[in-house]
Length: 129
Length: 196
Image (cartoon, rainbow over all chains, first blue to last red; front, side, top):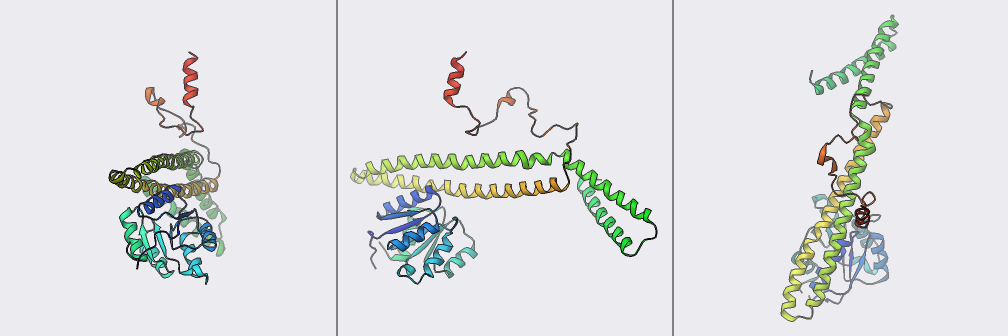
């Protein structure tokens, strides 16, 4: 499976620093069509309005967490319900990982991480590139 | 008696007195003086506790120390976010230039990515500090509740207020970085110096 690097990617985090880091790491990996959202609710609105090939989201946000966003997307019954979803979070407890997996997350990255980890996780979800 | 043992003893004594009074009231004690004496013992322990809380300046913890600490921690998050933003601004500018430099540019981009990766410290420290602030606020709430429950216990007149600066000499001048709303600006300092 080849990865279309022109696909739209949505990154979600309430820390502007993290949004910029992920955006730049994605740019380095060749993904240039990257949109940003600062919480789950904003992300959900973007997903409803535009088609994304990948969502990369933080867990710990208010008012809507990344976990709630994931559940809302997977339970939507809409065309976007199967959008690949990677959780990028400092929440590294086993319980969180299990809950995210049960909610339909495709992969899980623990902060802090590097470009190589991000590349490996995207490859694991979308295929090699 | 050691302070901790004394506290345990007082707690046990309070429970013992309350149980004894309840028991006597329930079973109709024939001598009210016995109950009165036990209630006086209880009053003495409560007054003593109030005095100890007052002497410890517990109100200062919730009114002054914790709010100051949380403000300082919030400032750490804001300042590191600001500095990290500036570092990333420079990295993005370097990256753009590197895009036009061929092979050498790719090497430079590889290095700027390492800087971006390292910048994630700000996100992690921010989250950790937020957790600490939340814990401090819980302590502040509990101390406030304790002080309110014991009434407005007056500080011991002989004790030094926690807020009072007892430092001497040069040490008294050292306060570390000031919060932006309390600090005077470089311009103000220049004006002050020029005025001499």
